[in-house]
Structure formats: C-alpha cells, structure tokens
Length: 106
Image (cartoon, rainbow, N blue to C red; front, side, top):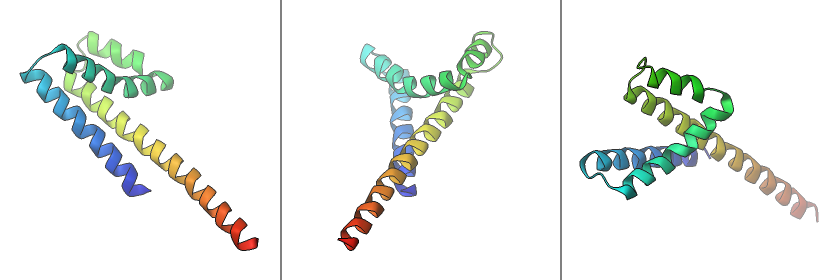
C-alpha cells in the first residue's frame, strides 16, 4: 500500500516535470492543455482547503516566484495521490479481511 502510493506520486511528478520541460522547449496547444489538466488536481485540492486564493494573490502580486507555485502544486499533488492510495488500500484491505473472515466462518 505504501509502495503503491509512493510509486503513483512519483509517476505523477515525473509526468509533470516532463510536460513542463517539453512545454518550455516545444510549446504547443496540446502541451499547454496537458499542463493545465495536470495542474487541476492540486488546484482543486488547494481550493477545497482555502489555500488557492492566497497563493494566487501572492503569485500575481509578485511575492512568490513561479517555481514556488510549482513546488506547492507538486507537494499538494503528492499528498493527494498518497492519501487517495492509502484510503483505497485501507478500504480494500478491510474488505479482504472481512471476506476472508466470512469464508473461514462458513
């Protein structure tokens, strides 16, 4: 469960880094849309926590650079994917445990 969560988080970050690098050297509409779709997960999570507006304001006022926003988005993405993997793993583990108890008792 922990390994899967880590692997998914690392894979998402790797894809994000590759897309951002490709966007810098080979700008295209496809890569822009892909970058925006990758950013939607952390943006929504930050929005739900109430942190997106202060981050947006700080960025547009020049108080934080773009790399800091990318870092916040990356860490948020890792946290969201990690938590999702843990929740799914816990639910699946609980179901497996309940089913194995049920079959042993039958």
